Image 1 (cartoon, helix red, strand yellow):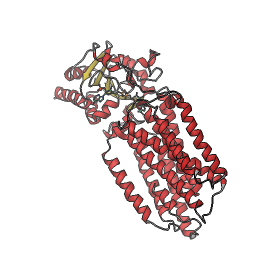
Image 2 (cartoon, helix red, strand yellow):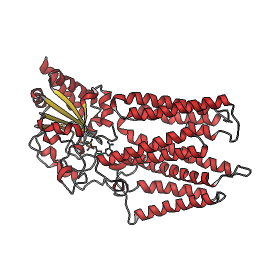
Image 3 (cartoon, rainbow, N blue to C red):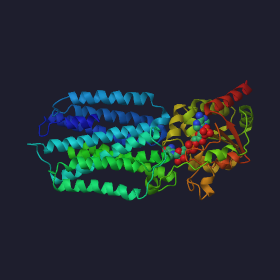
Image 4 (cartoon, rainbow, N blue to C red):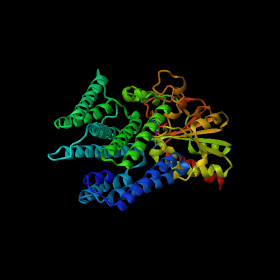
Length: 482
Ligand code: NAP
């Protein structure tokens, strides 16, 4: 945001001394390299911290480079942006819980996209005002796409934030001919962009373009259910990045082009990875209205017969085991049970039990959610095994311990063609000799469906809050060891 404000406050046409230009170019090259390395390192748990730090260094270099430009005519607006942004950003980073990261990310995208749309609008206004330099057709075309993407991402991300924060209803809202209507709005916005590109002097059309793009952003998110929202946020991230990249072309800022392109491409790749992990197509996520709770799913579960066990019984079985695979899910994040899970890991490892963690790519509510939590509890990285690599081990595993996971271990994904998660790759917890599932009730997970795993013969339910149950089991093990 600061970078874009600095660009906006730059008086066009001023000549800068060479030394300053060299410094600016150097900071931009450093920033560009840092961003690329950051993305590379962020993709693996062992190097993620380094990636984060390098990304921050890159952003600092980019801001310094932008702020030291001689063409900046006033720092006051930049200071106002810095103070305003910090007042919003710092509390978000400090007080938003980990489970709320998806909505926090949606809110950040809304701010970034708003910045892109506002800078584009300001650039157009300056160019078109009486005596302004005017604007050529190619630049106007790029500017229109930038503003369109920025405006639709702004309202779309705010809608996603509202749904995830449960300020707005999470269920998909659909109506007849919805997709045709949405495309009509998008088509009208695109037509405004084409008309403005041909004749940039049609200033009255610019607010129409903005309004239609913002309306399309809202309409795009309305039919999408809460379950698909993280995927959509990754897609909106990619739109915001693309918008920033186009802004780089308009402002002739190479770093914005690079950073925006990296952001756009990584967001797009992430949404594809998430779609694959859920066995869903892009069009199904965007237009499928997935995520409506199945009527009575929760109630059906309440009446089923299940075998439950106490923490003492669970500790006894775990003590006798040689291999244990822990499958963490969203419930572990909600309960903040990761440190107790670490205690359990220590207790079992001390007894020579081989303990591993099976990580599903969409466990929790954001990619890498489980890795982040388990890394926070300092569980060794080499114990975290990706789903495809560990699934073969379940038939020989003594205990599969499911901690607050549900959809990612639901066997219905393999055989029930009517299930909304049919075809989604799952962790084969049910193939272990004994399954222990920790959750508070028989209520369904995010997909809103029952899980037959809980009623299988080899499954024991440990009902309760994940943190409290895991703590009790770990304590039992510790007491038995004295
Ligand atoms: P899940 O299916 O949502 O199930 C979580 C379970 O945790 C619930 O059944 C809940 O049961 C239990 N739980 C909640 N609070 C708890 C607490 N304090 N203590 C103990 N248990 C608690 O979670 P998941 O298996 O991790 O699956 C993730 C779902 O999110 C998938 O459907 C996936 O497709 C979707 N999704 C994920 C991503 C991503 O990037 N990770 C993106 C898009 C969609 P109780 O209420 O009975 O306790």
